[in-house]
Image: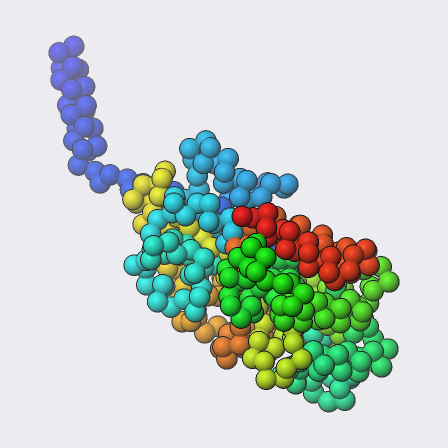
Length: 423
């Protein structure tokens, strides 16, 4: 019995010795990313698997907001429960709510490689609090096959330098039996994009323009930019394929009409490429044409399209550990500087990257068109931090105007009323 006890004790000691001398099993650091671009859900999940394989010390998980819930709402509930995502991808306006909870990224290498104005929306007291994930742009998307036929040669987008030039182009398209343009009636397109174009070219700057609307020091009917904007809006609505029922068409109708060559132009952004491609009859030959707001061929703004960062990623500082924050930073750097990360941004997620060091050409023609405007400095700022209800309210006013329910004076009055309510 005593012998058996000695053996048992020896075995226990041996096991303890082996356990103590063995190398400890390294633990993975788990990080999460809240995704607000549902169209790249699958691609993000695939790249997370790839990243985890290349970095076994990390477990990256993608969280996509459930159907019917925005990423903003999802994140608010996550903060409410005390378990926010390590990284969150949000629209610039939504990001503003969380900047006081974000990690300072000012010392990251990619800051110096970001395109001009790419960090404006996430700067606070000189600290950079967000990572620019995607650049998007909008203007008049053109079907080159339709425009080549209308102009009797190879269409050159730089030939349209004024409203009169655009009017002439539309007349040529009309003569071929094709409707010149599609003006889609979604409030976000009309308010957040079409109307916002007039804000971005105000000579005194947008903040001064808003102040003038609020204190009545600006007469909207005498503001040259706003007057020009309404004239351009008239040109679009009067030449639109849906002018007889301007509120009946859908977003998908626009992609179908342009892709099938039933219209020559569509006011929209590069996010529409997937829909256009599925209806493509022009051998993927599409590009962006600026939307001129004046009749001055020397106006430099008439040669520019709207471009800006439309998604930012911030790292939470309130509920994450220093190790989690460090791994999140490494992932963001991987996107910018690793060939696999760059391939994901450009070829898999189909984004136009916000970084000058990435020389991969976007796979789609709209992305390439945007990159061309960026490289030549012909861009207008994307008014991405407008109040959340701006598109809905002002877009509804524009809908009333294009359907003939209100006139120009009332449209401008309603836009002023909206901004006075923001005081």
